[in-house]
Amino acid sequence: MADQDIATPDAPIATPAVAVPVTEEKKPEEHWMKQYWRPMMGWLYMLVCLCDFVVFPVLWGMLQYFLHPSQITQWDPITLKGAGFFHLAMGAVLGISAFGRTQEKKVGAN
Image (cartoon, rainbow, N blue to C red):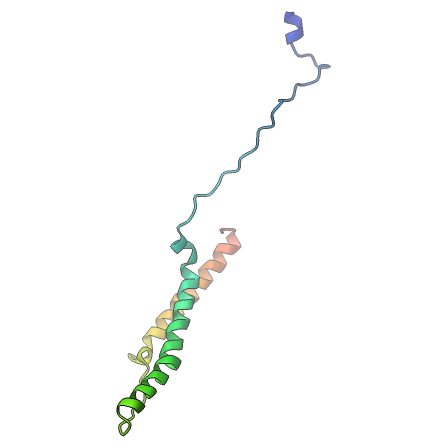
């Protein structure tokens, strides 16, 4: 009986009855804010520009027309005060983050 337990070169190799699934290493889930901050910055900038250059001037004109019809002034965009520093800063943030994301994709990071 002891001879039967020893594997010989001619004997077939036994395969396991149950296949063991190979598990891949999973990366830890990123926080949603870390993953989506770039698109959110873009949407936020677009919303601020839309409000400051379209919505608020229309509302300002309507408000003045109905409350003070003899004294109408022009809307002064809030984001253009301070030499438009808001637009420069947002352009820098969005531009640098887009460049950084491109470099991450070239390296192979998700």
